[in-house]
Image 1 (cartoon, rainbow, N blue to C red):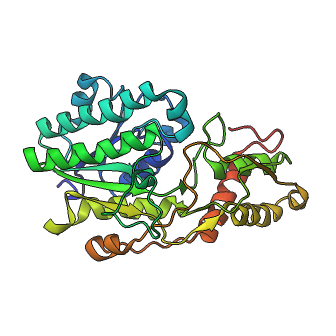
Image 2: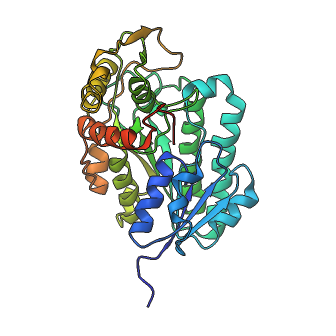
Image 3: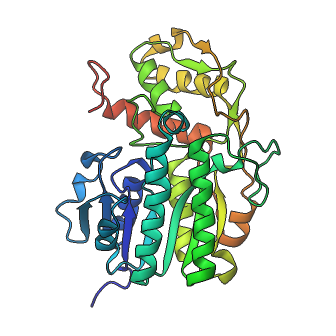
Length: 334
């Protein structure tokens, strides 16, 4: 008798940071998982431990190709759409490619999911959608104007999802991620996220550069809180909980200056020389918002969200992972 949990799940961008963690979670819980990735920003090493599992399928393809989306979504009960080109600076440097992937690819996945009769389409939205709104905390129904091409693309995703749910009846849930961090977040490249980038620099005894005076603040969100939100979005039976968007965060904010302090403290337990590494302060980055703090009341009320990891707890876990997964000799990525 087939395990009743063995519904079929498609995870786009499943070889990436968040996607591969979702693959791990759902494989562990007995689901059939299909990963669609073109490895533009994801890595086979993130999912290779699943290659021998009969419940895991890898499809190498691009969401910009509708046929790839149709192949991947065939027979899927749920879609977790994580594939995207992230990074505000990347979108400023190359808005066309960001739009092709984040808007065109998103629309392809929605069409393929609609035509395949998918039960629910859960997608990675973004806190960048709040744009120039200065209100804190950020509440889902109160957004401003986007401040970058990336933010425009993620807002368009929400608009398309809303139209598809109303026009075609497909259930959608958008999760506005707030500065997600944790295991497998890549520290290399021009568009690396701030936490793994700083970790690698500290490990090399190099001075990290903070954009601005260090007083900009973010609602840093550990990966396990994000996994919980994705699971709840899939499992909810509450009809009032679907066809909407949710902040996916911890609900607290940390300045970049404090973030660096935590990293130095936790990394110094492995290498006490890190405590002496100086921090450099540079100019503010174009398109950045000064402060970000999420209200998670909606997610708590409608989905039962209960995040377990604070910034400090998450950073401790992340530091252990990075220390064990970066080469001890030259601190390059394994």
